[in-house]
Amino acid sequence: MLEGVEAPETSNEWNLVTPKNVLVTGITGQDGGHLAEQLIARGDRVFGLVRGQHNPRRQLLELEFPGVTVVEGDLTDPSSLIRAVEIADPDEIYNLGAVSHVGYSFKNPALTEEVSGKGVLNFLEAVRLTGRTEKTRFYQASTSEMFGGLDYNRPGDGYDEDSLFHPRSPYGVAKLYGHWIARNYRESYGMFVSCGILFNHEGERRGYEFVTRKISHAVARISLGLQDKLLLGDLWPKRDWGYAGDYVDGMWKMLQHDEPDDFVLASGETHSVEDFVRQAFALVGIENWRDFVEQDPAMIRPAEVDILLGNPAKAEETLKWERKVNFEGLIKRMVDHDLALESSR
Ligand code: F7E
Image 1 (spheres, rainbow, N blue to C red):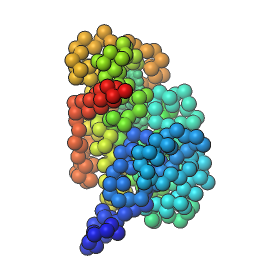
Image 2 (cartoon, rainbow, N blue to C red):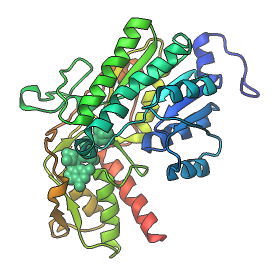
Image 3 (cartoon, protein in one colour):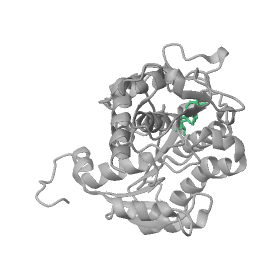
Image 4 (cartoon, helix red, strand yellow):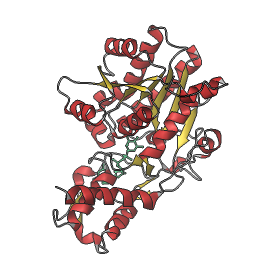
């Protein structure tokens, strides 16, 4: 119980104020950073699964979040997950860990399958085998990459929880397995397992290998005279982009809800990569952006998802989920951040 907090009258309110043990995979990534920040602010005890013998991200995590307890483990190693669950004794698990770069997944498909697909099964089994099916709530990070955006399955007014899946990459296929095995454990063992089908969510914590951060960083550097060109793949794909901090709040809301379920988190708008590029350059006063952008064939994927557009109505109505940052606000936030970052070097 937090110091000075009165005991609430209903179990639901307890849910909101009692510090919890929370185990997070992928804690060194963008969403993991936002989540750690939010959980610590709520007074929870946070355990972060970190893999590898000399993972440089571990040090960064320990510097930024000294309150997080690092637990060594790997989604591909079932016994390490059992150990992690025994150490953390979690009330909640957020499985954010994955091989998450779609382009990379084409080059490392078997690894992607092991981590982003079978890793989910390993983790659910660790919860079950340690006798925590009733105690532990489990969040699975599912993705809009499961939809595919193909001609026969266009999003219409937006993909929702009942739309057809047709993944277009080893990443999407692995995530679809993770999604269904998570649902299967909910149905088979009555576990509280919720899947968030999240559309693209970005921000200043995003890795430079993803297109939005690659653009905001390059735009900042070009405007400061530190870089000449921005090399990109296709500019026509359309994505439904939102701010990661808002989406992580939605994940948390899913695990505080009365019932486990699946929820789409999306902005309900779609924009091309070109729109993002144009608006980012405009923010630093560059209108002739084409003079600075060149195509890099290495960035073109064997199969592309043409268009993604999500319908977040269920999350908005059921979870009262809301977004604070829109598309324009997101680009401004990222460009401003990278301008400050590059100016201070
Ligand atoms: O690509 C195109 C690229 O890598 C967006 C992950 O978080 O969101 C993300 O997946 C679009 C694609 O994200 C470059 O071909 C053009 O059409 O930023 P991205 P993604 O593939 O949409 C989903 C929801 C996830 O779950 C994933 O984990 O941009 N594009 N030129 C490029 N993409 C990259 N990365 N780099 C380029 O130079």
